[in-house]
Length: 266
Image (cartoon, rainbow, N blue to C red; front, side):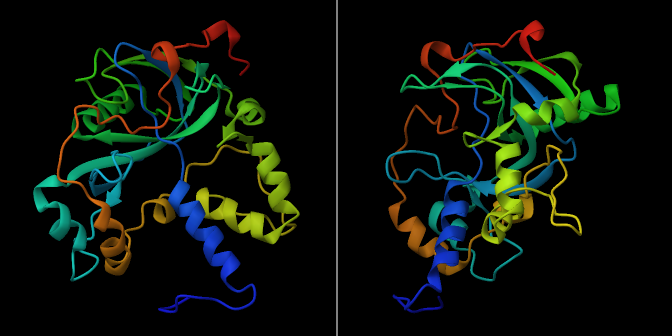
């Protein structure tokens, strides 16, 4: 698209689909204070970055990878301050808890991008060292109150999980992975979208392995360009807010809705 303000024909469709994919991205794990969730870890080697979380358009659902070390013009630090950046690691998980959103819709077995700041990263490392691996295990994550880590401060191991059997139940943004994979195998544009979101590639026959892959962190977390951030950060607000939730997955009535080990079909 370059610097032009318009496109002719259909050349801009792919660019717009890519922009929408990047704008939406995976839902993040967030646990309300006083609630808990059952989570299966998909991978256990976090990808760590420095990040900013400015308030824009009245909310904090804005996560920007810091540009330091990437661009000479570090717009994010210029606009929202160097001290606002923090260290965070990301892994992929599946939220197995049944919960109800504010519109009354029920959700379960949905993939989540799991953010872990320094204290949670240390806890994750310690748990992995104790067990040898976190991937393929189910944990109950409980959050004592709103002052605790957004992904919970009390983690209890539940059991190992059959990840192959689990594949048929897992959803990404409301659609099963099985359906997304089938669509991708019959549509090059759908395949491109799947590969932008997940760390997965088709085989020589164009078939995707029936596995639960981690998110494609290199695409999802890639820093925006200085030009993109200058446009985006025009909406930054200086005022603060006591409610910095922003994480997708908040639920009606506390949202704990644990599935219960005997009800999880894998």
